[in-house]
Length: 268
Image (cartoon, rainbow, N blue to C red; front, top):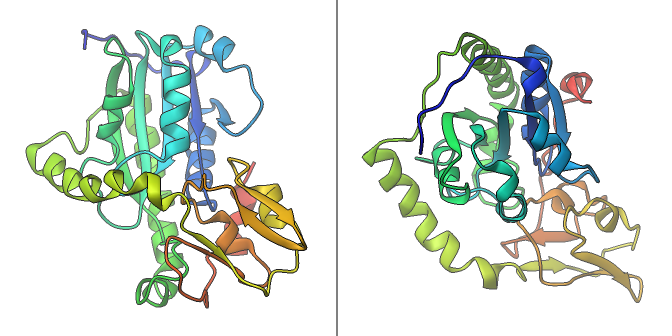
């Protein structure tokens, strides 16, 4: 990594993000609004090569899965690896509670000439709908956690404007904690991509097909099916009107995560 020069310039900065169920999208929009910079969802059909040629600093936001960027983010960074040469990178991630080096680990997926100058973790409610204990626990904290996350987003925005940059997770302890989660997660990632169950309560409404970020779902014989390319974002699980879909764990969904309506005004 070379020495870097950084000065806040909204015209030479952009924010890209991936969000499974809306947590990261909410925070990304808040930060982009504070910084008055362009914001793009990586799922969009967009000329990213042109964008990257026009900026000096790129903010990348994503939800942490087992202390690593989601598959869709890793594939995106690999696709545009050459375009990110010599860029200043800021990594901001949402997490349920603790991911060790979940933001800083993005350095492993960047070109060597890119400068990871800032990384921060932002706690948000869990969107895992069928994991015992967690959803029930989160019901009491959801509003508190989101309010706290929005306040932290404002603080992060000020740090970025003032050039008060730090790399959270860049410690031996953070790396060990992150690695302890990645070891099991990455090793079993390929086989788990087919761990998606759809039962006969499915009404073939197509909502999951329309909203899947990687086109993993399709309708056949009046029921949804998986192609085996799930990226574990749980979007389908949380929007299914019949709670027919289960991701990662074959356990009936009783709770679905949705952002409270009062926060939806922050969306763009």
